[in-house]
Figure 1 (cartoon, rainbow, N blue to C red):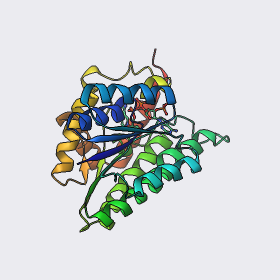
Figure 2: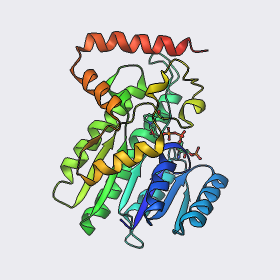
Figure 3: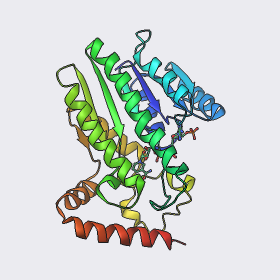
Length: 258
Ligand SMILES: NC(=O)c1ccc[n+]([C@@H]2O[C@H](COP(=O)([O-])OP(=O)(O)OC[C@H]3O[C@@H](n4cnc5c(N)ncnc54)[C@H](OP(=O)(O)O)[C@@H]3O)[C@@H](O)[C@H]2O)c1
């Protein structure tokens, strides 16, 4: 693969994808909001790996910014052959909250931008007859805690559907479903994470290497680590009433975190 575009490529899982591709000599296009951090991250990858790094300052909650990134994905100049649809954050607002601003932000970045950018990448790549699209969902999709669970369930179904539509074009589509990963995700959302057992935390670099192995094997869904594969298998086969009770316990424990 020659060039990878990663949304949210300056921190956490996105930065781990950027490291993994830079280490393989793949040029990068990094997308995030913070211009200084983008410039620093790009300089670091150029210095450490000698790869070309382009940056796009874009807030993916903004539709004009979504369009700029979509145009880059569809461009035939220095074409992108790997797209990691990754930028995201927690949406903790109650489903009963009359103020929908947090929900709207989640829909723009983790639904509309994911759809818009996935479509643009799919068009460009299918025309060239090759490419990888990795949509970052979550194991949260299998529980029923809040709008974040619902949004990530959409991402998983969307990703598999996109794979069906691109079947036979040479474009591989994989939904990455991480369990809990040590990144800035939880601190940004004010989640301490103290109720999460240590053994369940994943390392972002290891997660990405496992995911890339699954993508290379043509898997539509990647759930890195034996622990989380087992948890996902149990959640998928457990009666939904029990999953609902478990989801309530998880939400209650999180609200009492010290
Ligand atoms: N960490 C976990 O336990 C976990 C588990 C399952 C799934 N996930 C998913 O993994 C993905 C990455 O999360 P992470 O844990 O790596 O989070 P993170 O460490 O907080 O990194 C988030 C990245 O996204 C960028 N970003 C955030 N909002 C953006 C926006 N509106 N427009 C453009 N870029 C934006 C951030 O840069 P700027 O702030 O500069 O924009 C940063 O580069 C998310 O989709 C998340 O839902 C995470």
